[in-house]
Length: 601
Image (cartoon, rainbow, N blue to C red; front, side, top):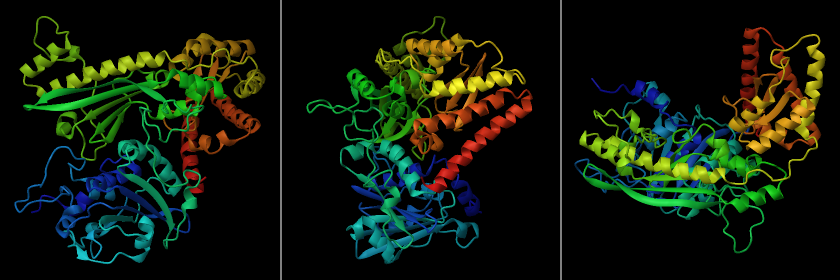
């Protein structure tokens, strides 16, 4: 009896933990770069409904031999050349492709049919395929033998402007039943952020380019489908340390000819070695903080009073965390471990990066799909189970004691953890000293959100005479709101006081704030004593593609509608009905995102 049931295995493999389509594409790009490619193209073929029908990932790498291609679509295969005994050739521990799980696992996470053409010279193109439905139906249980085959003209004409490289690989995904995004523009926008960050070093150094191209179902160019996102289709480097000059970050204002063209400046950078299984392994940590003069310039030249509300501040929030690099490729952005609860808002203008060697994959818990380093956590000496009479306080003593106990892996992890904690702490201190509020420019006149609050407040007062609400009928606690603005929305103390003082003077009980919501809904309503906080998600499709592009007057009208919903929730005394309204609000936000995806706005 076989150890593996092909039908059940392929069904299980389809839910293998890839975060989204961009990460699945990145897995194939790993193979391309490992094969020496300096160009990777993502070809998107749309049908008449403007939805994605096929995706191809093509490169100009070394290509695969017939024998290598025969195993490339096998689950658990290495994806590299072997000798007669089946041992990997050139099996070092430095490359990205160590696991050999990429091509089949990433592909079936998105589609049911994978076709591969690969060639070491243009005269011998080998072809093979994997079809999920055929495996489920029992058509075959072993992979088809690669055969010599000409590529269809449609694909020959689409890749590299019709110039087939001397060697390369062409992977085609069709029957895309698990694709997360159905529009080419959405896929590019998400990939620009994620793939741009994962491959930032390769892109910024010119070692490899990643370009998106869009075609109709017959192979005719449709690059206009991406024109709102990009003119060229090339993915730009997305550097969470903001030390890369030519990147996806919006152009910095007022740069002088001889000025450093970066948003941040380096704070710390150092390598260190850890011992594991008798060998020394080098790890490198870097950190950065925003340039004070650059933040001041952004505030002075812009209309926002808080740096966090500018396009640069929002970009920093999306990239906030510890960037874990492996073989020059990011595998994870850690956002929870090593940080305080409010760091993402109060200390967002900082960056931390750690380079880990593939030789420590097992110690750090790097997953097969290269998306996580599960064991990279903040370790606490107090929680170590040492049988000692006196507490062990020094980090070096903790590490030595772990090694004495034979727990070499935890000794390595603890050493890394202590260094990361110090680097994060140093960067946090620097970031919190930055001038993130426009000094002396908090205008006393009413802004758009103040007018929304006053209008909703007036209606609320009239309704209270007939149907008092739960929260807003109580006396407002402006001190509580002031604390919330600091703790949850990144205000500094002075700005929070000015904001709540103006609300108190106006006797306003509706506060409009902007923040990423916990469940990706478009807006949320949080109730304080006597105050309703209307939280609008600036990352939601309805905000980025609709509300943010309205005139000031239309924005105010739209926000009044949201304020009306907040009043409705507050005046609902039945708890079950209140929960139903909350669920309806969340579901509405999800449906809107799907609608915008279909509209491709």
